Image (tube, rainbow, N blue to C red; front, side):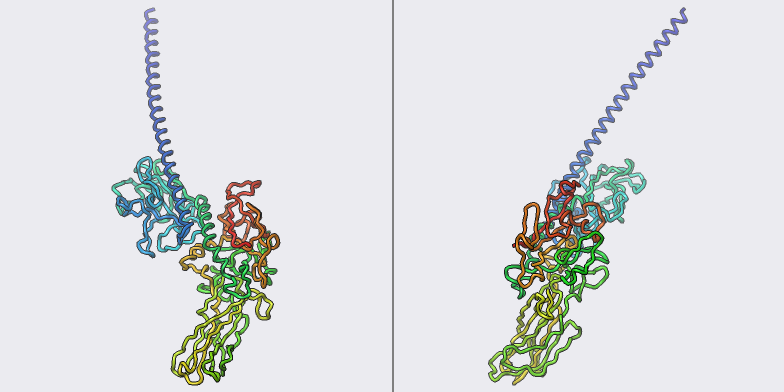
Length: 607
């Protein structure tokens, strides 16, 4: 009996010990869970804070790019350089790295966010570290060039999370978090991060983990033992809608007015004062860049019926397609540059010799020849006074040039020269040249539609006044380059060069009413509700003479460039008809609302 009581007491003491142990374990578990929850909440708060700061920086960056693209930036769409390292802890802190000289940029791919340049307060992450910033090559003034080429088909040159370039990432903004000892794994290189006072030798690897600056390759995620950055990507999907909107407004201000004045009555006879003439369109084909792309030559009506298009494409005539952005000067013929067409504009026939048009003198023996090449015509001979030596003697020469309306051309009067000499050792004296130029309707033999006839001449120096005796020599010289390229094609043009240098013409669709091309001469001009281009949305308009459509970036992920017009324009804008639309920009696929849609229509001219 005594033994049973002792066993019972031992059992009770065991139960009590177990209960006490359970209480202790529960307490420890509660404390640990509480601390883990607190730590988790702390981490969550950190990430939320960093996320807000990173998004604020991203939106500021997009806004900065859009504002500069819409104004006077020579490289619209470019991103600012990171902050210059030697600006840190100075009054210039937060400023994008400036150009050391116009041709020697001081811009690295990686650096701290230029917060002052973006119009921000100094942004820091939850660990009070300033934000870092990575910009893709080709999107900022860096390396060895100050000239970029950014348009709707531009992509990034960074390797991000193993995705090779080109891809859609053009910048990264990074909250670096606290310094850590980085363990070697995958793309991460072992490093014990040390953050001393910023100096020109500040190493990005002490702030950013798992990247290779030589490639350049970066990560947005990584193992906790090797990575504590919080990263936000800036992609083409983020930037291009803002850039394209800015470019559309800028082109409306700067490019459209130029297109309206290339062929007008003030420059060319044969064009009525009531309406300008627009060049023929280049049939839509692969707009490039690269070999095998469109030559950007506008097609005449006679050639239009012979055109071939890609599978399933409508037969696009000479009145809509690509803007005829071919070059005839200052370019090198190459498979990679098919729009270089130095032989496009030609003499329709050999120019006739010089003629005297005032009748107050006589041209004596005259000879004409091709000088050095078939592009320069030289006529030279003698002229003598009339009975009254005070009367002037004017001579002229006429030539017709084909295919002028197949591109954007301009008259260069310096390519027409008239000079005179006493025929001995005396110098050749230049005479003041005047000229007329007429756009031809094709009704005159040897003057095809869309050609231009140039007649130029000068009043020769008075022989008596010059002390040359009774006769003197003359020369008339005409270069084929008198029909030159318009300044809109010049990458070095201070006002318009941004457009061609960034190759926005490659994503630009062009259309003109048939009666406002050379096919409409001599009357020229469309009639509202009849043969004009029409806009069906947002407001009906049936009096458009010419328009442009900025196609925008690829909406369905199609690889461009290609020759498929539906990969550039949406819905009825790509059907080859004369009816166009400008709908609200949308990236959401919804057939009922006719979206996605990112075409931007620019009306060039309407009556």
